[in-house]
Length: 509
Image 1: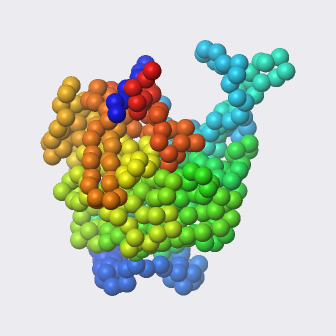
Image 2 (image 1 turned 90 degrees about the horizontal axis):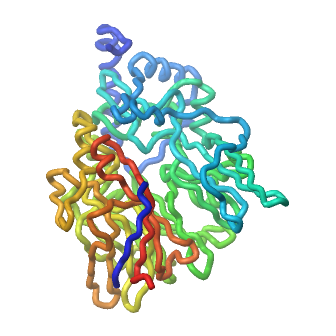
Image 3 (image 1 turned 90 degrees about the vertical axis):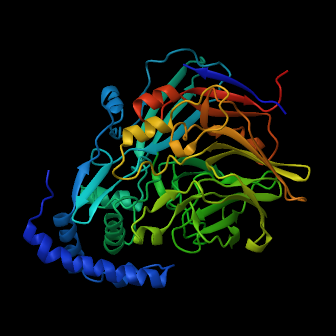
């Protein structure tokens, strides 16, 4: 099979030394005690109604956080300062008519709505905190989700009207911070280990949640209803006409854990395959929802021995595709002084194939070369083989560089273009390690053999794939991706996409 690519590329913390000595030492002791308990009781779920049972206790914790932690706006990269389009935007309140349209809308273009979500942080942007415990910071994928909708309608004279509207997704934590009118959750993903641990525990004690529910990654439809999602929580149902948040979707109480940002509809049955990863056991559960969205038909713990930060699940007509790659979340690593999220270049990587209603014992595991793949373009059955197409890199863009490293330099090196015909990138050097290529794994269910290869060359880095949804789980001829502008990304120190690619998985006629 040949592939043809056609592209369109156009101070000081606000506390005294006395406070440090008198009040922080007891908290260090409390942290150590809690961490000791954490080692013993994982997995755990804390009932905050029992942990904090008085308003006074909550006020004391708030006062402690306000006194010890200082919120700081994260500095923008030079390229962000120059362009000036990286600041959060305000809610419009109501839709506005778009009067300046470049080009023409085809006469046969359908009426409807284009809707997406993305991060739009409250209170001025992403934050870092500094305290006696060290520093912690939001990573670039965080920030409260905002819906952006473009409505296309045509009158009887075939004249088009375009309207735009936006609105934040009103998760529980969004409403909580909005009511407080200030940053309240401490960044709990990246930073000095003690700072992240203290944020983790204080968020849990104060709010019953270790982090905010951001709902900023994807919008999907199932059984005529629409949902906004980020995989650290369950989806929020939304009204696509008003952009109002209608509430959490927990499948009638049957799903009470994180929910993948990219669920997949099963070809033929209309069922929806989902999965959720968590930092505590069970690390990875798979679910199958009914076509009408009212019932969780199947739920299984696949019994991983680590929490792989898996962003997407694949389906075929008979199987579910599971990615177990060495980007992991590990609380015990954090307790030991390491990062909460880490990509281990020497770690094992494997792909699991499970029948749709299978269990952990029924999974066929295939060892593959270590890599970081967030997005699956498609997966399908081809004779005895299950074929998986994804966008593969040799390093993880999440969470980004460790604290203390030069953020600009790290991204510049990672986004460096790969030389023409340079197939083997030295990921240890960092140069080009974030260059993403479409990739194929062919997994033989009878022999256990794995064949893998690049589908695209080194001219373009590409990610964020899409296909015609009617071919999900079936062999498709075309796919689409965003094209990363490697030179602009390298020089600016941030991911920049400069076009779209149409992929032909067979030679065009």
